[in-house]
Amino acid sequence: MFSKGPDQCLYAYPMEEWERVEERIENSEVFSKAQYRAFVRNFFSSADEGETDAMGRVLVPPTLREYAGLTDKMDVTVIGVANRVEIWAAEKWNAYCDDNAESMDVSEGMEIFDI
Image (tube, rainbow, N blue to C red; front, side, top):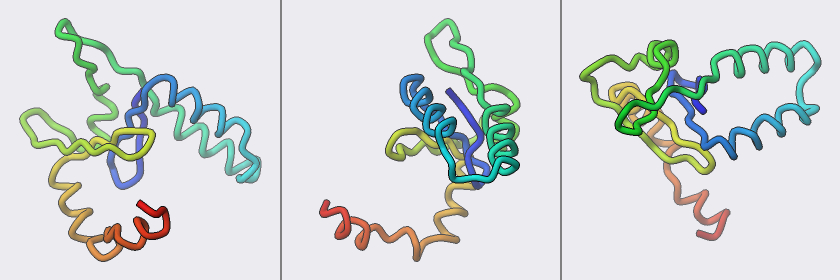
């Protein structure tokens, strides 16, 4: 299942994980009612399973490709992030890394999680 992510990337979830995400959102009491409505409308309205082509590849829906700035014949970066995959236009990923280089140092997190 594909959905919009922050920073103009896309999130891709296996269906089993997507169902867990839906359940967590539905059972959340973090937002006010108005914030909850706005969030679920935006998040779920962009979600799409995509289609599978004859070669078994899952195709990213056009509206989500447009959101992420993905065009034909462009470099794409795909990264694994815990329970999902993020899909980025390579130039946007590189810019994100450049802009956030200091906060992307993983050594402190590795110490906290003892990994």
